[in-house]
Length: 257
Image (tube, rainbow, N blue to C red; front, side, top):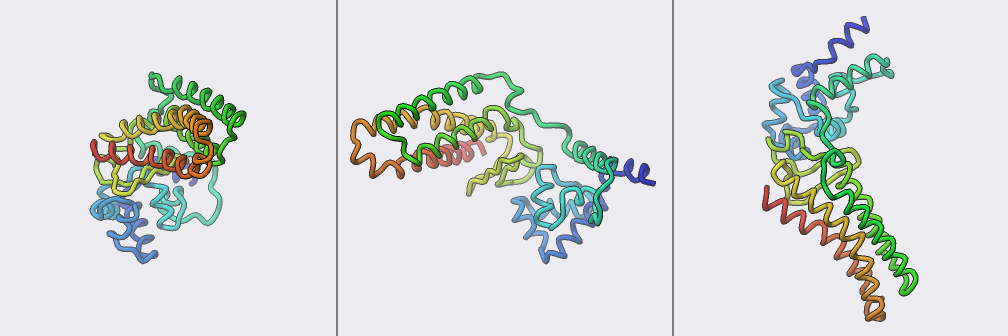
């Protein structure tokens, strides 16, 4: 009995999935338009899901399940689970998700390019810059945070980010990218495969600049004008860190949107 059920789950039943989504949406008191707005897609897409004409891209499975109050597994199974699943059933759900995804996305570490080297060099220069600040002027608290953010996001953009977004991003105006631990949402900006490569490049360049150049700039300002710098350092660091990321992201995203 279990074997037959597992085999059936390798192909997602679009009609059962649509009926399950529609029932959960109504339980939450949401209209198709309201659900679509929260997912940053059109209400026509939700309508197609519920009629069985199409299924959501895997990039939307987690946010959709969170909005509907079920797990992603329950969403793929098209029913709520009262008890833990058998290992064979878990494997079937994984296979279903892979089939929906169309394969694993290509990651940054799989492409040939100079960014991993630039990241490593920037990290080294940043560490030396922090040491120099600590030795001669003291390290502003905001600088530690900025360099850490640059290192974390730089590692993601240079090694782990996906190089191509799912097809759904080219079909609908989606305003958020969810990829593992990454959550990117820039007000007024939608993401697609026209602007995504440029956005990734901006993220890489920003991370390297924050790690390598910002500590050296802080050191220079601390040595040349210590009193004014002590009063303004937090604001300047935050402006360069946040503004240096989100403004270029927005401009590049809009240009190629």
